[in-house]
Length: 413
Image (cartoon, rainbow, N blue to C red):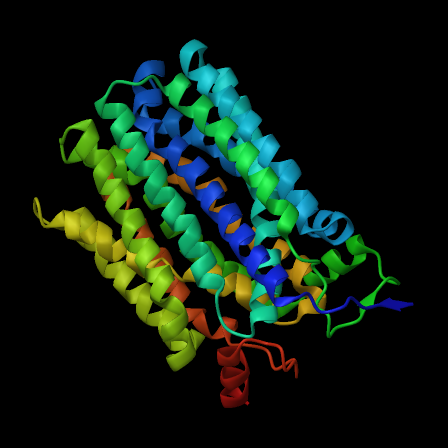
């Protein structure tokens, strides 16, 4: 038995586009609000770099609990319901971590696990919705949704810097963010369009769990997952450690360290906003390879560059890693019939970077300083350049696919 859905009206697609942007912005804003206050939580709870790395591991652990379930959840309940529920879960987690900053490590860890769980499932669901909107629009837009995420992180980081400068407590700041994000995103997600493409029949004969398990056996999907993992490590490490490395190893005031983090996020936002034009013109593989090389240069400049030149490295680093994750999500959704399962698998592999990244950098930071430990970012981005061919678009024969995907698939033969 197959089901089809009627094409949504143009106004409905525009509303869904705005709602998807809201979901990406809200996710980035919530995450950066937490990341901007990591140094203050570290100081209040007297955490060493190694211990801090283990605490940050809680976010990735929560995400990895959610990600294998995300494909079946989105397939069964839809991206709209998944985002609405997980926005509330993330809000509860962020508020719990905010409370924990006053009383001890345990509630912080519990809150971060909930934050990671909500963020993991939310991430897959909003990316699935993003690919649906992209197909209805008939042009590449996924990286701009991720630019929305980055815009949210810039706003969160700048607000965090303001909160640090004006001595607003972590608890008050993060609790307010939790309430605003949970309420606004839950309301906005009601305007999502149905996940199934109107031109593709949706089979009701294959269980969602079986579909997800099949995706784990696809070589291309696994290679795209490792590609995303490399970029996710570079992005996540910048999110977690740039402000700490700048404050501790470059010996600058806390507010300036947070601004260095904001510069990284700003460059990532710009890269994601201009990305569609570059992808349309040159294709996925050469663009992501070039960006990875820029990221390598930026990370090495940040680590080894003299003061104040190293600050330029945060811009190159941020811009260089900007397209890896969104291009990987688009590659996973080239075939809309398998989008939820493949995006779930790719995101699950990618989030392993968030699981292994914090303790790895923390462990190395205890021995060679956090700043020198960040050299590992360049190594992972080097791996990404080797795996870039895995994101070459599939030729699904779908006329509704974004134009750059159809051209690239034709070129790749």
